Image (cartoon, rainbow, N blue to C red; front, side, top):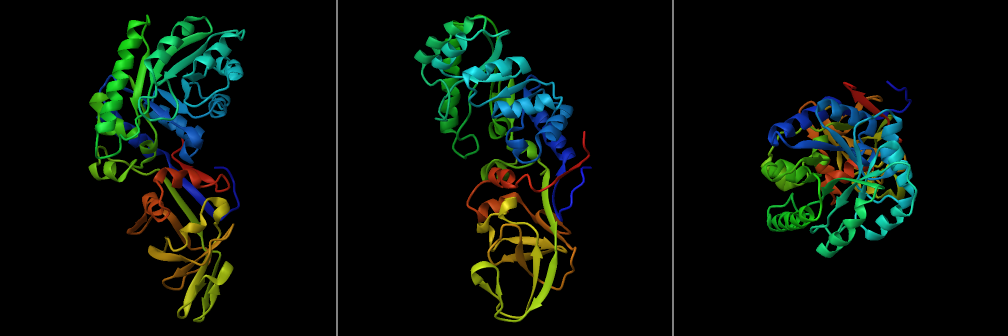
Length: 373
């Protein structure tokens, strides 16, 4: 275990990553494999450790957002196929080809720039189709027909095609169905103008769990690999059981009993209404504990305690239900005794989604890996 000196830390249960992948594999058709999505430092969980665990659990490939993320995996010894799903500058395909990293292509102009380069070996690419997400991708059939002849050049090895569903986690499936139908239209056109097989992947966590029979060669398992449901709808449906992998903890570094009328923290926005026990926790907004979480709760000795006063850069204060001691464990995400605080609870407090909660815990907070692969 890497040594650290803080009284705050994140615990990652790698066995839960493995469990979640195994649950999805049971849900999918036998022919459908898994891309483990480890972008954004594996949603704040740790890219290298999660990648190794995911591959050990049966994921066949990895997906990231940037070339830098992919190169980091390679330089740390990860040999599995890696797809960069975001933009890569044409001049950087040299690095992608050299590291054996697959990049995403969706612009004719990008292809033409790569054609002007003298690559020592072909760059492997996946075509991204925008079937209704409105983010990046080939949208029109004419664009597809314009780009395909150029991809027959020796600079390219077209390995796969993918799209991304915008509403797969919602009750209504109308937009999902429309996107899938348009993907089939583009796929029919592609097959009429291309010789050779490609791998197809359309499903994100929500689509892969809810509609396994509608998936292709691969799915991209992201948020739910970490034990989090992508929406309240999917959480209620619970197509597979998930175990959250991340918990966030700290320890009390100061405890004091204060009189009624005592102000706490910047701006004196909280003033005690009675005699109260106030504890100080060494985490703050520099660690990703946003100031808007004032009023949220943490666990101390299995009891819920409210964050009072403004959250500082490095510390925040809580109103204890009873006297506690310096060194007592504080849980911001996770379980103590019979009480649990989920990421979804913090997400609701911040009017956001659990994805953001996982990603906002800064690298300043040490990660401890349980059952490291």
